[in-house]
Image (cartoon, rainbow, N blue to C red; front, side, top):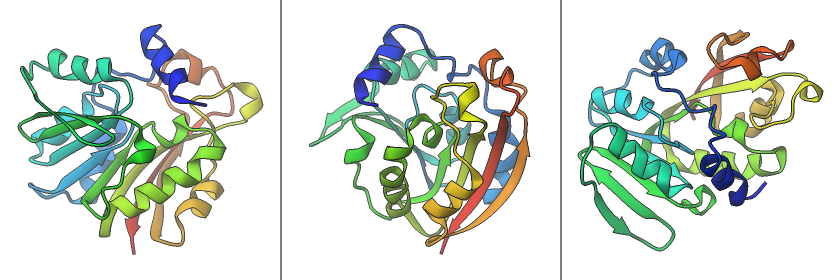
Amino acid sequence: MDSKFWIDAWKEGRTAFHQEQFHEKLLAYFPRLTPQAGQKVLVPLCGKTRDMIWLHDLGLKVYGIELYEEAVKDFFTENNLNAPMISEEQNFKNYSFQNITISCGDFFKFNNKEAFDIIYDRAALVALPESMRKDYAKIITASLKKNGKYLLISYEYNQTEMEGPPFSVSESEIQDLYKNHFTIEQLESIKPTTEGSRLSAVSSMKQNVFLLQKN
């Protein structure tokens, strides 16, 4: 799966993963991370999620990474964050307004080591095929400070029932990806009710929520 897949999905309107409302699991479980005003939170593969507004309103410094530039522009326009500052670096084009920055570019070229207190992953890991998930996990691990916290929302289902993305990522795979560097706690595992008709039609579907803390 390459960048063209996701660019085409945005262009063709295949964006059922985007929600207009704040994600219910973010509202329910983010307080467990005991966020403090001024901390930095990373939202990988963020699209134009309004969850970044909710995180910003907690007093956090929000940093998103998104491949598709039009989604980044839409985020600022749709949330009335007018005239963001734009800057460029080697691999990314950065859009910033107050304490929200979204970098447009390839997540796998991200190299901001130990910069973040918190990571929020609502649909990033599950957007990737198995062959890309180890590299993703390495970047996540390197980006989080010692004792930093990571809220991860994933799906687990019989992959023969539906073609990803979102892909099925089992609890055992999450353990394999992160156990060497994190303490892992599963907070919830239930069939999702607000993730759209496609996912709710998969009989084996479970939505898993994990809280990880870097050792």
